[in-house]
Length: 139
Image: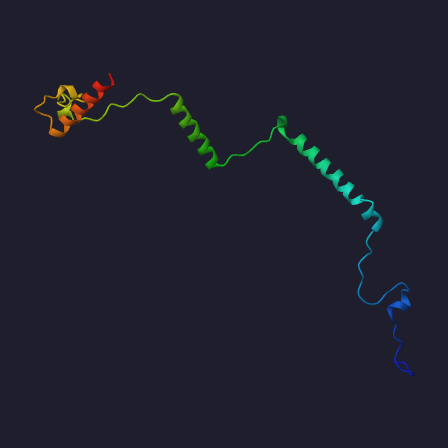
């Protein structure tokens, strides 16, 4: 069944398809007219404005809804309770006194005039005398 004259002639792609090219494909040329004419920029601006219009229409009542995290909810709750304490302070607590000392009266007084001269030390007498003299000199 073989050919007496040798092998069949090889068919190459460019013989079958005349527009066939060999080698790596080169990238398409840059559309300079569209770049210089800013066609791509205007197209993107139109797409962005359309996107923003859709976004504005999807918002309920024109307000942005912010989903709070657990930490932010706690922080808001703590701030509100702290504000409540500032606006409406609780009544002052009664100081703790042991039961056996509740009915005992104090023996000290903050007024200097209630002490007798026998109880005062030498330094205390000197301070009182100096204060009296300075008061007398100013009158």
